[in-house]
Length: 116
Image (cartoon, rainbow, N blue to C red; front, side):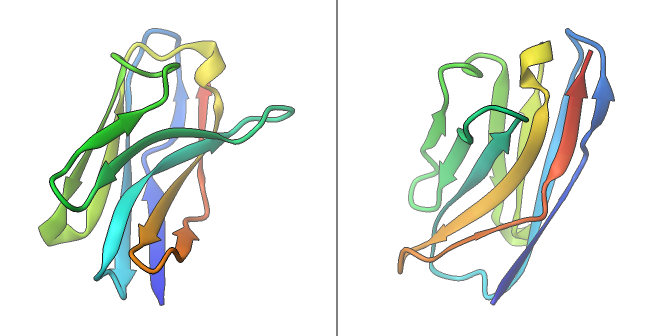
């Protein structure tokens, strides 16, 4: 069983920055990737970024490329999402997720990001 706890959300003006953190605890071995998705009211869930355990390759949605950066501290079992040049349309609840080699997926409780 794994637990994911996000932090770092909040309110910021357009053009500003926020850094989200996601700390994983419990059964954190055999992970395939960790990342972030977001859910805004009335919009479909969107995969934002991911970082793969093997090799550290990253994925970004087109909507955030060049503005968001994800990184991982394996020793701390923590994944980060640095969000720069934030736009109003980035407003959403951001969830951390982990995908295990088995295909099992777990996610955190989410953290609100509001850009005005």
